Length: 252
Image (cartoon, rainbow, N blue to C red):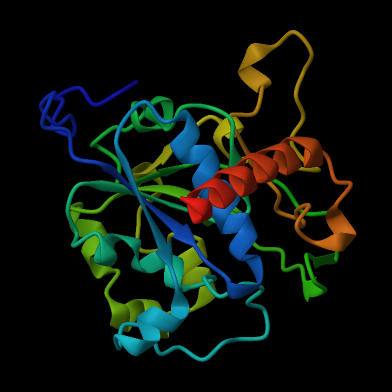
């Protein structure tokens, strides 16, 4: 399953942190904090978590695209800057902030195979809802949700096309459908790593269907309208833990 030549495995003791870029939206700061907490708490490897904040990218002249009507979050397009932000080196991951991790990120990193330019869950579905989260229109397109969690082979020659110029000017179809790649350059990851709340199902007795990362794609418990969604209890429990730890730190 992993890389056959081991090129992506740093020497033990000299392990570089695995870089995880998380889509950040000012309206969903809590979702970001809880997502980050859920990764760090369970990770057995060093990780570096970097929020992709649109305001910072604009200030640095890296992002200047005008927000379109179908963009439901601040990171709809800035997510594709991940290889650029990782200096086109090594592997890095992008993930939306509306995820809750229930397993060790090392398990996901160990699925990495250098022959691919990107790896992600190959969802095949059409959302039932016509709107999402806070009333944004739910768009339907091929490869929907593939880009919500992606392992990027940042040094892959094909990914060098993802410059700020391209990310700021290319169409949503080009970017979200990975049109800069051939189909055989897009590796597959088990669906449990991008388990769509309200769509994917766990089968009793089948451990391969147990979610390792829940994606509250319709809206999560941090939105009033979605506080009773499936797996809301798991997210709320994680939030309580995060709040307690944040409180403790502020008192130190």
